[in-house]
Amino acid sequence: MQELLSFPPPHLLYRQLTTPPPPHLLYRQLTTPPPPPAPTHNNIYAHALFSFFCSLFQDGWPIIKHPRKGRPARRHLVCKEGYIGVIEDPKDSRSLHKKGYHISSILGVAQGATTGVFDRTLADAAVRAAKNDFCLSLEFKERTIDIECDTPQAARDLLKCLEKITN
Image (cartoon, rainbow, N blue to C red; front, side, top):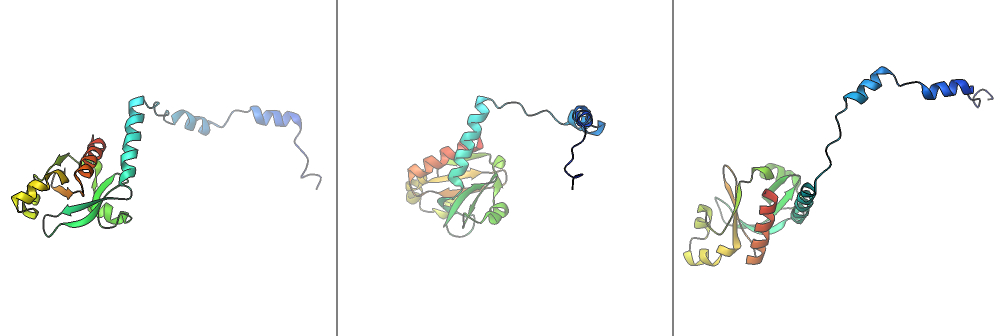
């Protein structure tokens, strides 16, 4: 029992504290990449703004989706983990990864009922003119996602959010 509690002699303890680390640890310390540069004010602001707008889409923005085939239906516009999409249940991130698109693939956002999908689903010209302020289209390389908001103000707010996220 007395051997377990004994300490090494002071000259050995001093030697243990002052010996340099082994060469393989020195090599690892020299080869680690330098830390990233400090963020600038613009980067911090852009990241904070992006995070704020993405937080608005976490629970889903209620919209009416106008599909290429079929009738318009109530859905949620969701933005999580870098993906944006129109899905039925905003908590189902698996379908978002399956049906969604990466945010960087958005080419633009168009306001108004200007696409062929809106021409089909809003066949009457008077209805299309009345709903023009309610409608938006997310433009991708291969297609558009055509959505309708409940109010013109919601459509304008959504347009601002999407423009900030895509720029």
